[in-house]
Image (cartoon, rainbow, N blue to C red; front, side, top):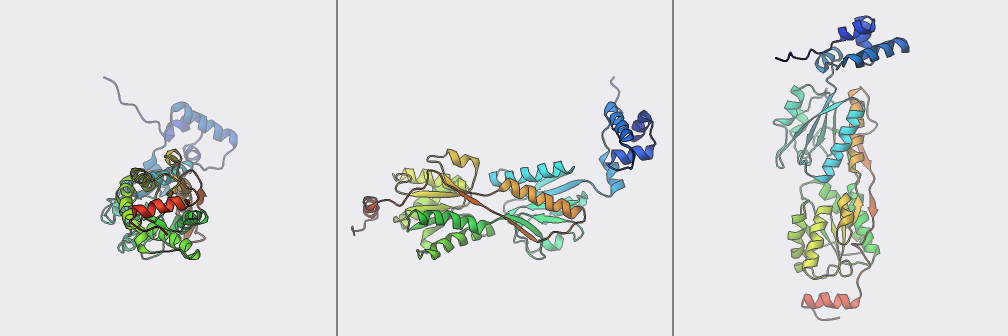
Length: 356
């Protein structure tokens, strides 16, 4: 019968290196005022013995678990997954691990997610769930002694927030279409209740207003954030407004659905209808035609949020309660100058309108 493997202790490392237990413990915990030769001897002994730190014991001594709680929404969301990758890698770089939990699409998370994190004595919490942003009870549940950073607005007391410039994203996408000569520009928005949706739509409307173009609600359809949304709602928009020559989609996946729906109607892309997405997903470069999009720095947002959170954990103070990261336009083949008069005549005939 195989005997259980015995864990190597600090005492074992001290005996092997010939250094006192107290000094060995300090060095293995990243401290200790010793010579480089002594430090190297302790580290070598720990390596030879296969020493692995006891995190529970270390937590009792340091009053920290070196664990960050991360409460998120849908793990399958490609933008969010990039945020989480940036956050996790930054945490690991600084010697922290993550404890993850997700909340339901319509759930607030205050009933189980936050208490569960607090019970496990995490050192801080990173919130990455848009469905929690209007939860008025959230600020009352948060432990005031526990550092918190969010990727979304939190109602109530101010929480340090890291986010992209979503209004500028909507503005850049729409301004690009205006500069190409388009005068009737539709929009497929995300979920109406989210601030991201409101901000990107505000940028869309600002670009149109600056150019004196129509901003009618008849040009806007709610599509969500998935391919199916673009497929489903674009025909409704075109039926109501067949004079549309360009479309701003608030999410790249919606734009993929919109491109497919446009092809199904027989419209030539981008000659008869230009499409701009938003998010800057890697897959946007491989659509047909390749998608013009506004890149959102998801990875950098996650990494910056974690850096700020760990600074708070160490007792630091943020210089601002909101960090906004810039976005930029990537131009590809899904956009082109507004179509010629013959193209406009074809659309007018489809709409049953007389030539002008």
